Image 1 (cartoon, rainbow, N blue to C red):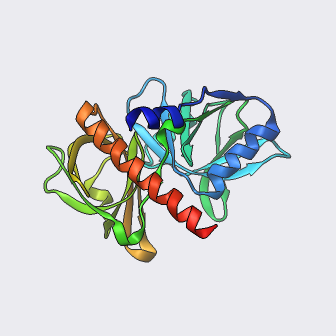
Image 2 (cartoon, rainbow, N blue to C red; image 1 turned 120 degrees about the horizontal axis):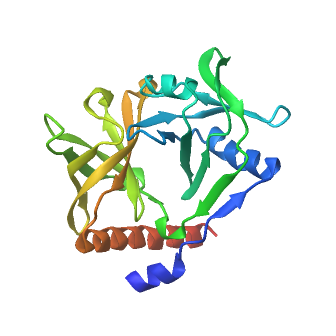
Length: 248
């Protein structure tokens, strides 16, 4: 089964996009889907979160939303080089800073405006197919470890070979830190519990529905855990294909 997965979902080599039309088109996917971006400065280990809020093809500029945590702003305004990385439907879209950014406003909010990237890396990683779970079959999860005062319980929304998206009731953003590795993530999969350390890559509280969404990446997975994840993703893929056939 693992070999079948690998053959069918072989990773594709990254492409480097260089034309403004290609670059703006792919960045617009990140903007319209409100996909989170991770910003890292070359000389610093801390990670910051932002979003693409505007792409202007005429002026060849983009605007990034206010950074979380906010203290990353001073590195950006000091002209420190940085890298931006986002994921859209299993595709990694990343670029390096291209000149200085200035503080601006967009739709009444604070943003940072700068030049459209000169190059964007586009990497379709089919081996990281992300399978979404239906609301009726959401899996219970617990996040725990030395960095947490108490375990946090939530639900698994989707999963891939490299990580998953989680949902928690209420605002738990004060208890978690982007870029932090948590020792014990446990998911109650249909065929038994899966446990692995994870790195927090995305965190957002949606006030309207009082729900926190988190994205995690598996950290130093064992062979056993990798096989459990592959088995579950394969099971979800098979179910999705069956439902697609039924719809047709």
